[in-house]
Image (cartoon, each protein chain N blue to C red):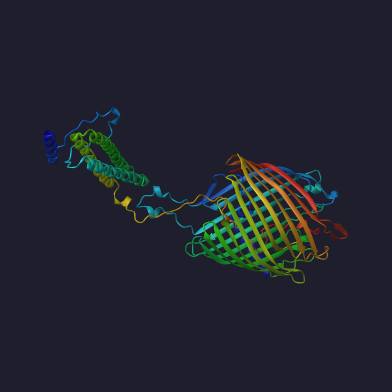
Length: 437
Length: 196
């Protein structure tokens, strides 16, 4: 039953995304460096394509700990992005509106709003080692968002986010861990007059599917039903509450290794606030509770919380500090818990838009298969990186990206008589151009 | 003194008959050719003491300043309505009110001097100038009201729409929901297991 739901949901999602064409992931938090005028492809619909190329270097293709398995390589990345959106209706300037024509000059209320987009990447490893080169692949990050009656008392929202992740294994191998992850959401919202309050029901479906038959033991599906409510009590202050009941299960395995994912019915809920204390200082905070008990495995019954402080220290500079403590279902075990502390600074200097950030995660896994090793594992994950964009013109920019990850754990796993240390250090640096058409 | 009384009576009689007496005005400069022809001609009867004339003059000039402000408001209304015809009409009246205000202020100074020198004829003359300027200014103000019309001025109760500055970091616009069941972070499998 779960599988039929998954297939149905996925087919719908794929149909939705393919209808959108190539697009940029709106929810991927990756703001396009450039934007062109776009091409109208129908009444009220415009597509904005972006092409790019990057070259770079990584010192650890396989994210491996052992020196013998650490392989450096050059990188070549070709990028295609696009956004397709229903055209925004500009409000009419009241000063230029004839008194008699005032009513007819008002923009018509949109019955459907659509925005889809995404990013396709082709990654090539520039190495003399054929094992390294075999890790080449296409990655995708596509999303679509359709809202029916966005200004109505009742509105219906369909969201989909499809990711194809193309990553090497964490040991020297021809195999990769190519994986498709799709999240589909359907929501029915009630937003009475004034639109300051909104509540509704939402269903979310997430599927993780590994393309290699030998890795399909990790396939999973998560369904969750949410009841949510939010109230915009001031123009820049929102309070909200959410409660959900989920179903986590395995999708089975067609490979030699039987499915390992254990089921659970997590319950989560809480309340939060997002507000601007001043024009320069923003605060977000949430507090709640999360519970899950995995069948025959581990479980958690703990608070979840988080806070984010943002400060715009200059008209072209902003810093954000955030902390969160939460529990999530894991592909590597039953679940993982993160204490996450992050700092991010965005700064524009002349034509350069730069962003640097660092985060530390104290991660705890529980419910790891006994066939791998001990059921619990603790990691300290540190990541630091930066991005810079030099804007030549609105449609042309140079981009540079750097990220270093350090995963430090005392955990040792074993499989087939071999012992692995999953700790690793990996740095990747790329630079290139983006052009909007 | 007797001759002065006769002169005042004669002037009052002429005003009463609608016959204005032209007083010397500076010849229009070439640049003033487009300015409206504004003068404060004629005199009115003044059975007032010098002190009363000074007080009354001050009051009349205060009223004229009020007219000036009102016509400026009308000019703003016409400008907001982006109606060029109404704006030109009001501008013409505004120019007239300004010139009349200048005439009144000059006459007030001259009245002060006349009071100081004890010249009764000059006092009456300057006071008459102020009074006529105020009457003409009243007329110009009324005509300026007519330029605009009620549909712009009387637009009902004041409605204040406040448009705040753009909020670049609106915290309420973040689509991230911390209570989502699937993590918003994309968990990588290669950080944990050699199986993959």
